Image (cartoon, rainbow, N blue to C red; front, side, top):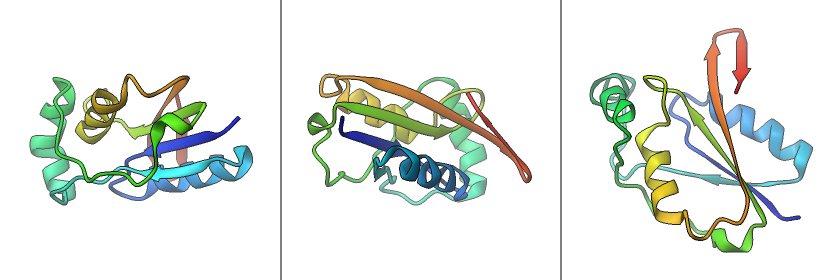
Length: 116
C-alpha cells in the first residue's frame, strides 16, 4: 500500500516526527508550504485565530499526485486546538482525491511529543 505523509512544519518538530514515521512505514513525505513565509510571530497572530476558525491560506503546489496514494497521513502542529491554515487548504483542495486518510496532530514541548 503506497503511503504519503502530508505535513506542515513551522519549527521543524512536525517534520522530524514525520521523518521517523516515514522510515518506519516506508512512506513518502509531502511537505506543505505556504506561499507567504510565516514567522513564529505571525503563527501566533494571525495564525492562531485563522486556525481557530478553520480558515485556509495560500499554499505552494505540491509535486506529487495525491490520487496515486492509497493511504494519506496528514500531520499538523496544533494552533488554537486546530489544524494550521495550510493543512486546512490542503484538505479542502484534495478531499475528493484521497482514498484513505489518517490525521496526526502533533503537540510538543521541548522534551515531549504527544501524538493524537
